[in-house]
Image (tube, rainbow, N blue to C red; front, side):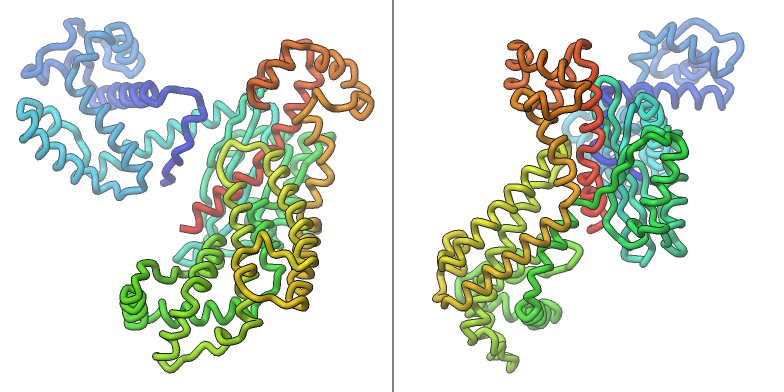
Length: 540
């Protein structure tokens, strides 16, 4: 049973209306199964008063539904309905918070206790809300089924969609395949949704992943001729040139639409994390991690170190590091550098001296690594979040590449202005040249890993700034529309006052080619972001 994520409101339907509809349907179905009409049920509860005086001849689901819709106002005050609706709402909140379904009873008990003190006259109304574990389970299943139906219906309106995949292993050593979909309709409204997490209990070959992916999307009845891109985590089974998932997926799309151009992206955040590993400063990282593990992995050492820091009026210790949690690397390095004197003293007292902390050259390497990792983490955080355009990712990566070039030039000139930890130490010329060389290698790694951005640079530029693009540089079929657009003062004002997405949505029908181009650009946007969301969910 999967719990829908918080971002489910992309379907533009008011959640309270959906809850009300779901609860109403549930009541009708339960009455039909029991062979009762609404009149029978209200007569059975004469203590609360009769809700309707009309008898349903045949208690079939259709008759009950028609009767209910005809006399809906009479049932709005029916206490049982409000209790059922409350049960759905609370079950929805339990599911969103990833709480155990059995906690429904605890919630119900708390409400009753609070009612006894605040509003005793309403105690029975709250006691009537069914929140047993089976009930909460049933409510969540029904909500999940309804959301699945909504997504299936929404997908029918897609003119193009992209897919994001992330395969990772959970704490039970079971491979879990997270699948996301992002589509755009004819009105350029973007829908991004989590599809499923598919457990892969056996092998995780490219064919296994492909079969699981196709099965999950076929269940939603997607039109494969409208698939335009896929984003993966870059694993060999995903991007293998001969039999990878991407190759198989491209073949499937071309079977449905031979003229379709199908793009393959590597998760941007994952690539950025891989770029950071190209610095090859293991002589620093190995010492840092070994020392941190010695302190944190043993309870006695951890308590004694925290007590030692408290005596020195330091209230923040050392965090743990895990490779899958990329930002933790920067946090560990930063705290280690700030506490390096206290760590050296503590390790000396433990009979495990860290000789590298007495080496000025090693300390300078640590300072440089702290600074550059902090810059990389800032880039990582900047690119996180939902509802971003791929052009925004491109801008962030491009800006960082320019910064790298500046930092390299400054370090070559013995200027560490943007490396505060390194600047605080005495650094010789030879070390500066070494750090400039490391930045040069990092620049090359970024250029190699983000070559797809170079291929799409012209499209990105046109997508962002139609009003500054030279008409002679765009396809001939678009040139006349582009000139008309650039000469329209009203649209120019609109472009300046709203975001890119809203601007394209407001384009009149006189610009069909530009609208189609925007559709083609938007259908590539943020596929990488979906993979990022999947990786962050599977981290915890």
